[in-house]
Length: 150
Ligand code: ADP
Image (cartoon, rainbow, N blue to C red; front, side):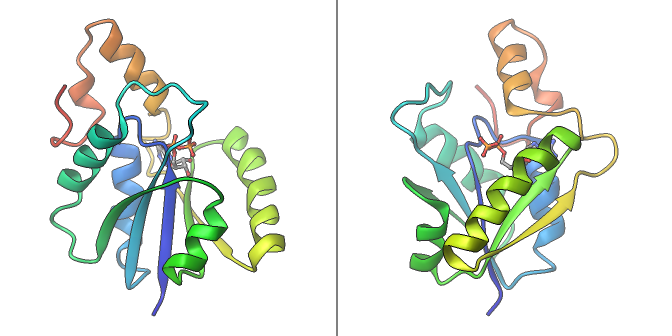
Protein backbone atom coordinates (compact mmCIF):
# COMPACT_ATOMS: atom_id res chain seq x y z
CA UNK A 1 0.00 0.00 0.00
CA UNK A 2 1.32 3.41 -0.93
CA UNK A 3 0.81 5.50 2.18
CA UNK A 4 2.03 9.08 2.61
CA UNK A 5 2.30 11.31 5.64
CA UNK A 6 1.60 15.00 5.00
CA UNK A 7 3.16 16.77 7.97
CA UNK A 8 2.66 20.42 8.88
CA UNK A 9 1.42 22.91 11.40
CA UNK A 10 -1.85 23.61 9.55
CA UNK A 11 -2.37 26.73 11.69
CA UNK A 12 -4.88 26.99 10.05
CA UNK A 13 -5.31 24.73 7.04
CA UNK A 14 -5.51 26.76 3.80
CA UNK A 15 -6.73 26.16 0.26
CA UNK A 16 -3.03 25.73 -0.60
CA UNK A 17 -2.80 22.67 1.68
CA UNK A 18 -6.15 21.47 0.38
CA UNK A 19 -4.95 21.73 -3.21
CA UNK A 20 -1.92 19.53 -2.49
CA UNK A 21 -4.01 16.84 -0.80
CA UNK A 22 -6.77 16.94 -3.39
CA UNK A 23 -4.21 16.17 -6.10
CA UNK A 24 -2.26 13.64 -4.04
CA UNK A 25 -5.26 11.44 -3.27
CA UNK A 26 -4.91 10.02 -6.76
CA UNK A 27 -1.23 9.19 -6.23
CA UNK A 28 -1.46 7.36 -2.89
CA UNK A 29 -3.73 4.72 -1.40
CA UNK A 30 -3.82 6.58 1.88
CA UNK A 31 -2.76 10.03 3.12
CA UNK A 32 -2.25 10.82 6.78
CA UNK A 33 -2.45 14.54 7.55
CA UNK A 34 -0.10 14.79 10.52
CA UNK A 35 -0.54 17.93 12.59
CA UNK A 36 2.64 18.77 14.42
CA UNK A 37 2.68 19.80 18.06
CA UNK A 38 5.75 21.55 19.31
CA UNK A 39 5.74 22.74 22.92
CA UNK A 40 8.06 25.64 22.03
CA UNK A 41 5.87 26.94 19.22
CA UNK A 42 3.04 29.43 19.72
CA UNK A 43 -0.01 28.58 17.63
CA UNK A 44 -3.03 30.76 16.83
CA UNK A 45 -5.27 27.67 16.88
CA UNK A 46 -4.80 24.95 19.46
CA UNK A 47 -4.36 21.34 18.42
CA UNK A 48 -8.04 20.45 18.80
CA UNK A 49 -9.10 23.35 16.58
CA UNK A 50 -6.48 22.59 13.94
CA UNK A 51 -7.58 18.94 13.92
CA UNK A 52 -11.25 19.87 13.74
CA UNK A 53 -10.68 22.18 10.75
CA UNK A 54 -8.59 19.60 8.90
CA UNK A 55 -11.00 16.73 9.60
CA UNK A 56 -13.95 18.77 8.37
CA UNK A 57 -12.05 19.99 5.30
CA UNK A 58 -11.13 16.44 4.22
CA UNK A 59 -14.29 14.61 5.33
CA UNK A 60 -15.19 13.98 1.68
CA UNK A 61 -12.04 11.89 1.11
CA UNK A 62 -12.29 8.31 2.35
CA UNK A 63 -8.54 7.70 2.17
CA UNK A 64 -7.47 10.79 4.15
CA UNK A 65 -6.96 10.58 7.89
CA UNK A 66 -6.06 13.41 10.29
CA UNK A 67 -3.86 12.80 13.32
CA UNK A 68 -1.62 14.78 15.66
CA UNK A 69 2.00 13.98 16.40
CA UNK A 70 5.07 15.09 18.27
CA UNK A 71 8.70 14.34 17.51
CA UNK A 72 10.39 13.29 14.30
CA UNK A 73 8.27 12.88 11.18
CA UNK A 74 10.29 9.77 10.21
CA UNK A 75 9.36 8.12 13.51
CA UNK A 76 5.72 8.78 12.75
CA UNK A 77 6.20 7.30 9.27
CA UNK A 78 7.60 4.09 10.81
CA UNK A 79 4.71 3.92 13.24
CA UNK A 80 2.21 4.43 10.44
CA UNK A 81 4.04 2.13 8.01
CA UNK A 82 4.28 4.99 5.52
CA UNK A 83 7.15 5.05 3.01
CA UNK A 84 6.44 8.55 1.73
CA UNK A 85 6.29 12.09 3.04
CA UNK A 86 4.18 14.53 1.04
CA UNK A 87 5.10 18.23 0.91
CA UNK A 88 4.07 21.22 -1.16
CA UNK A 89 6.46 23.57 -2.93
CA UNK A 90 5.48 27.19 -3.42
CA UNK A 91 8.71 28.95 -4.31
CA UNK A 92 12.53 28.69 -4.30
CA UNK A 93 12.65 29.41 -0.57
CA UNK A 94 10.43 26.38 0.10
CA UNK A 95 12.68 24.31 -2.14
CA UNK A 96 15.89 25.20 -0.28
CA UNK A 97 14.31 24.51 3.08
CA UNK A 98 12.58 21.30 1.99
CA UNK A 99 15.66 19.94 0.23
CA UNK A 100 17.68 19.77 3.44
CA UNK A 101 14.83 18.18 5.38
CA UNK A 102 14.13 15.62 2.66
CA UNK A 103 17.80 14.58 2.49
CA UNK A 104 17.91 14.31 6.27
CA UNK A 105 14.79 12.17 6.38
CA UNK A 106 16.10 9.85 3.68
CA UNK A 107 19.36 9.44 5.58
CA UNK A 108 17.50 8.81 8.84
CA UNK A 109 14.93 6.35 7.57
CA UNK A 110 15.03 5.83 3.80
CA UNK A 111 11.76 7.70 3.50
CA UNK A 112 11.11 9.33 0.12
CA UNK A 113 9.65 12.82 0.10
CA UNK A 114 7.27 13.51 -2.75
CA UNK A 115 6.78 17.17 -3.69
CA UNK A 116 3.86 18.65 -5.52
CA UNK A 117 4.08 22.15 -6.93
CA UNK A 118 1.36 24.49 -5.79
CA UNK A 119 -1.33 25.08 -8.38
CA UNK A 120 -0.87 28.40 -10.11
CA UNK A 121 -2.67 31.15 -8.27
CA UNK A 122 -2.25 29.55 -4.84
CA UNK A 123 1.47 29.84 -4.28
CA UNK A 124 1.21 33.10 -2.34
CA UNK A 125 -1.06 31.59 0.31
CA UNK A 126 0.48 30.72 3.65
CA UNK A 127 -0.94 30.02 7.10
CA UNK A 128 1.11 32.88 8.53
CA UNK A 129 -0.43 35.44 6.16
CA UNK A 130 -3.89 34.00 6.81
CA UNK A 131 -3.28 34.43 10.57
CA UNK A 132 -2.35 38.05 9.94
CA UNK A 133 -5.55 38.61 7.95
CA UNK A 134 -7.60 37.03 10.77
CA UNK A 135 -5.86 39.12 13.45
CA UNK A 136 -6.62 42.28 11.54
CA UNK A 137 -10.23 41.51 10.70
CA UNK A 138 -9.78 40.87 6.96
CA UNK A 139 -11.73 38.37 4.85
CA UNK A 140 -9.73 35.23 5.59
CA UNK A 141 -12.48 33.04 4.06
CA UNK A 142 -10.93 33.65 0.64
CA UNK A 143 -7.89 31.59 1.62
CA UNK A 144 -9.23 28.68 3.68
CA UNK A 145 -11.58 25.73 3.03
CA UNK A 146 -15.21 26.30 4.04
CA UNK A 147 -14.65 24.17 7.13
CA UNK A 148 -12.48 26.90 8.64
CA UNK A 149 -14.60 29.56 10.28
CA UNK A 150 -13.30 31.37 13.33
P1 ADP B 1 5.24 23.75 8.29
O1 ADP B 1 5.22 24.47 9.61
O2 ADP B 1 5.74 22.34 8.37
O3 ADP B 1 5.82 24.52 7.13
P2 ADP B 1 2.71 24.32 7.07
O4 ADP B 1 1.36 23.98 7.62
O5 ADP B 1 3.04 25.75 6.92
O6 ADP B 1 3.70 23.56 8.01
O7 ADP B 1 2.92 23.63 5.66
C1 ADP B 1 2.77 22.23 5.48
C2 ADP B 1 3.08 21.86 4.03
O8 ADP B 1 2.13 22.50 3.16
C3 ADP B 1 4.44 22.31 3.53
O9 ADP B 1 4.93 21.34 2.64
C4 ADP B 1 4.15 23.57 2.78
O10 ADP B 1 5.12 23.82 1.77
C5 ADP B 1 2.82 23.23 2.17
N1 ADP B 1 2.06 24.42 1.84
C6 ADP B 1 1.73 25.45 2.63
N2 ADP B 1 1.04 26.41 1.94
C7 ADP B 1 0.94 25.95 0.68
C8 ADP B 1 0.38 26.45 -0.53
N3 ADP B 1 -0.20 27.66 -0.59
N4 ADP B 1 0.47 25.69 -1.62
C9 ADP B 1 1.08 24.50 -1.57
N5 ADP B 1 1.65 23.96 -0.49
C10 ADP B 1 1.59 24.67 0.62
